[in-house]
Image 1 (tube, rainbow over the protein chains, first blue to last red):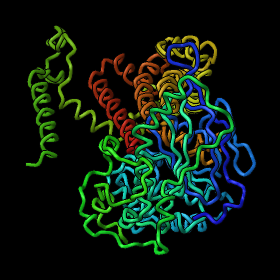
Image 2: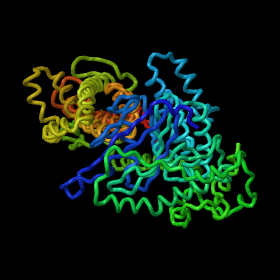
Image 3: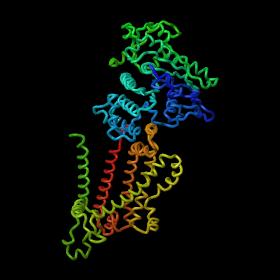
Image 4: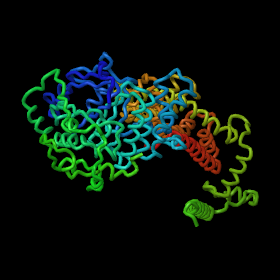
Length: 355
Length: 274
């Protein structure tokens, strides 16, 4: 996906550590320690980990809203300090200004980014980005309170894309949305993103969402003393479609790997890390879970899948617990997709997605 | 009947019931002209002053309101002129109070240090009755007009100050973060994010203040004298003209309500739903 891999990375996180004064008064509580990773230009990277591993803290440090206890964030060969328009943020709770209409919220961002533009230019630019997320024809004049959660998040995404940041930070942007709305907006996000050369860093709890969107997924071990343990390459060609992606041979290998990490290995790693400090300057292991599948794969990427599979068991998308508690076997086997009775969740819960 | 009509109709019924009872229990006083000279000399006229009936007050109201702006010298001015003086004093004192309270409230709200440093002063000064300032004001300012305005200033400053500080301090961090990630300067953040976010709370403080200011002006004008609706009440009391006293009480109520309504409307404009 990335044809700019030869360039220097846009973002380099070095030995990032965040400690808080522990609640009992003495000593420090380390949320995460010596996190190291890089993000290339134009790359879409998701970070997944259990609650409390410090994902949101990493996000806030990248946004410049929080300060690291140690380590550095380097963007374009410059250490970041404080918030900047080069790093746009979409917060989980939308963070639209409630006294402004949707349009004015986007204009607010555009004006901050391009203070020299005329009113007309600002307005046209704002409209262009609202149109990309399908929020025109009257809805743009409504206040956030009069919009649904999904529409609000679309305004938020429009505002973030409108300021054309070098790095776009998404903090669980779909966490508060129902599964159907989430699917639609994910599609819209891909659409807007693929039309740009935007670099995106996104927090999510949802493995399927991450696989649909990301080039690479960073996995964090459980906190405290969390680390960025693995960098999993999603080897599924784009354009991806939630209906077809599940038939791709690499899909289940990758998904199993991710789920297995989240259900058991993240805990084991946390236990291992409990005693000994995390080494410095160590990049996460890069994993290609679908490598075996890839090599076996014929030159035809769209091997026609068994049509029966789509009618498999349906379960709500947002049910993380259920997903995490289900047992998956990875164990490095080569036999790929067909054996596991996995739910065709995305397709089944969002029939209108294939656009 | 629709519910929207029920309440006003009930209000009217209550009003007429109270007025009717009031009118009924007030004995009619014989007109002095109808008494003989002997009766007058023997004190045939009523010995006690009575609260006048509503009909007399209504007649007085018609008389006063048909020519509200006449001016027959210092002791006889129309009710319109008196109200205008009072409103002028309230608004000027209130204006200066807002000029001080809102910026200071912003400072206190944005800086925990300023809040802690100024809090003891506010806590001591706030509970002082505004009229307690009057002697000091008269001595220092040496002008009764300006002293009345000062008293309004000092009484309306506190609710505005405290509400502004509270509103500013409690602006949602998310919105401040939006301003920060958009690299807005402090001044711009204050103007485009914090002010609109805190505006409903600030307006509530301003509405409380204007209410208090209107309460206080009547008392202040009774002390200061000369003009104003407070002075008018006191003057009519000295004239033993209870009809005018009750009429002016009603006028004070109506003007207070109008001032409050204006602020209620402004409050609606700045209100927002999250």
